[in-house]
Image (tube, rainbow, N blue to C red; front, side):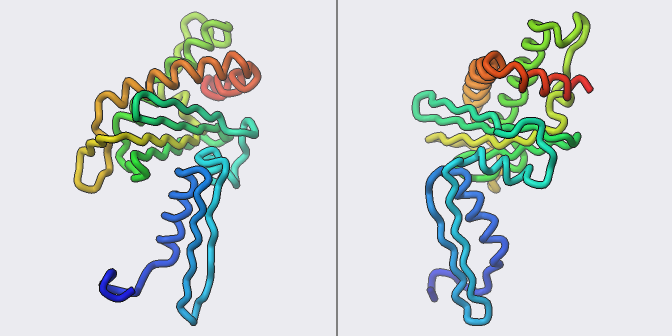
Length: 206
């Protein structure tokens, strides 16, 4: 409507990408995006019951994945919620997308640091416990992130960003919180899914 936006020239694809992202990050919401300009009338509906797990599948859709369903971990501490979905593919590229209150934190921050620290520790501990890793072997952060696609989404009341563009989350308590949830729940997942655990660790060793 006139008066709200200075211009009517919106980039359809930019908005479409953002609305899709919002629907992935907020499981179950339904966003209908309609362009009624006569020369290019079109409509997209974004609705994902699988939330960020579907986001990970979407990113990996043209890749060979190492196990069919993303690992999904969530936790709530006080009013702060943490959601992580992760899945490995057969490439050596790392794709980690992190969000705080639905804002894409392109430069990462404490939530991403906590996640990276925790998965490195958990995979090393598991590998040692079951002798997949030899006594002197130790996986680095780079090792465990090769071929990893992950989406990290935190929602918190008092988000502090390190720049105006909200590109990096600065809340120090979030690091500890994310690390704790991943430490506990990824360990449980690996214990319950030994085949997947072995596939992940052998990929990291390779």
